[in-house]
Length: 351
Length: 77
Image 1 (cartoon, helix red, strand yellow):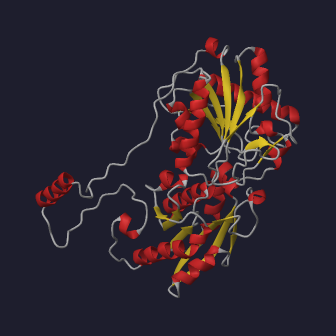
Image 2: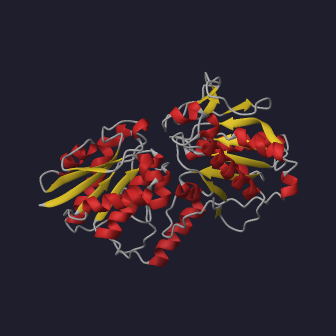
Image 3: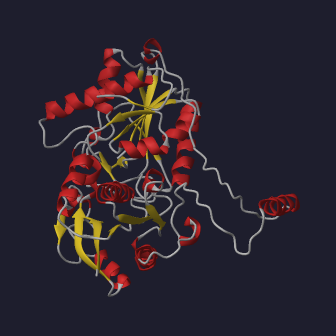
């Protein structure tokens, strides 16, 4: 009988939400949460023996310690497969799944499989390292995402021939493998077919996709003497807004941002500003919002002459579940505002 | 967001706890923070210590704005 072990976060481990995101890793010798779905999909040939549960923030902030603890749990276990997630669009969960899958694969040589939505930052970080299946945006996709991972895992266990990434349903890993075409078509014929399609404006598929790296040119440094005269803008994805959230920015999957006048303020006071971010425990940010938007120390640097001032507005949105496309659009809109007012420097705090 | 603001020619530093994410997304100037719920001040520590940490890290971020770089850089704190 083959064996599998599952990794899930504190939410799916039924420990709690963001207030429990610091939860240290534990291992259960039973099925917890999604592990049941894995067992059901795996059927009788593979037994899920253990479920590991770990808080997303714990893994995010204490990555090495988290990995070490979990590898310690696994040292004396026998298993043939390791599943993590599915993490859907939950960024920290996706990154945690990637870290642990990589460590398990490297240490024990066991196939590790995870699943994330294409918008999850974990995809770009880990797709080359492991099988990251293309999953849905939210837990509603669990019923679809788990069987996709399991079906592929079974093919590996059974030594079946694997198809290219796109056909199997995972994100391409940048690995090329030679295959025999059935029916065989010689390369010159294929390239001519492609060229003709291109000429006719028909869709065609390249055989050599080049992944594009999306980098932006590095902005020039602002010499200290210029910085001493310049206003610096504060921007955050941590959801800090005036109490009441006047712009009704969404607590997750945000499409809106707000700007708030702090020209008369020395710091952000709890009770006047709070966070609407649904992706982390709000207690610390609500008590002292400067922990996320550091207006208080920026004012001190202004008085000390290190900066000319703090731009009159700070800009805020929520960066959990927010798509990269929306984040980019909001970034462009905020940049436009800053440029209009001649602002050349900014600090963005992310959570 | 950081990238789009930088693309507009504004020098920007991202203060982030999840460094691998900031690096993968492609921020050029990065300064580490201490956690997700409280990037710049641990509520379990005395107020003075929180202030000291925040002042220090924001200072590093301001220095980062003034530092010419040739590649993506995580500034040590």
